[in-house]
Image 1 (cartoon, rainbow, N blue to C red):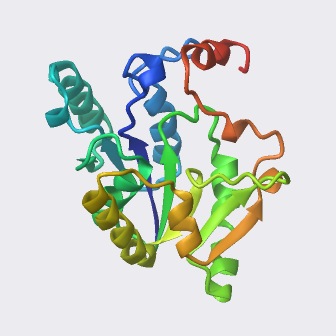
Image 2 (tube, rainbow, N blue to C red):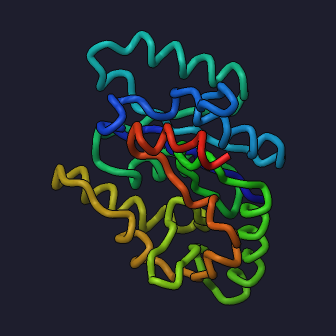
Length: 216
């Protein structure tokens, strides 16, 4: 069984602290809904990891939006337990309540994730299992990898937990590459997964968000 995690706990400091609940100019839909709708259409169960309202000074609007999302999709939600320490915390919290042997990790800020790209990534699971790999990661020709559009075997939570404990003890964040390097990754051609590369477009700034109008 395959399930997914949507990461929505980042600080989004370059977007005024809000990213997942900004409405896209092309469809008037929350950014996170574009990702959730794909998973819903594919019948893939998913967990969404949100920023924790208890870390926010004024959390009423955030709680309202998270409640809206939970009621709409009726899928489990959870929260970052440590604020501002990177995506590994969110992946760990999501994995703890995920069901399935393989977990598809997705960010909330990739508006052009497609069903086709996800299916191509999932098609590599049999190869990964035969080869004893525990994660499947798209890799570009320049060596850049896409760890937030990847599949992780549920067994990887053991090594992830060790890294998260180190983060808690040190008070410092850790790059997601630290997790990849601790596992046995199957690297797959990013171009093969998505020939036009639009899947890997992510939104980090207001300018990126406005550019959605141009990339339709």
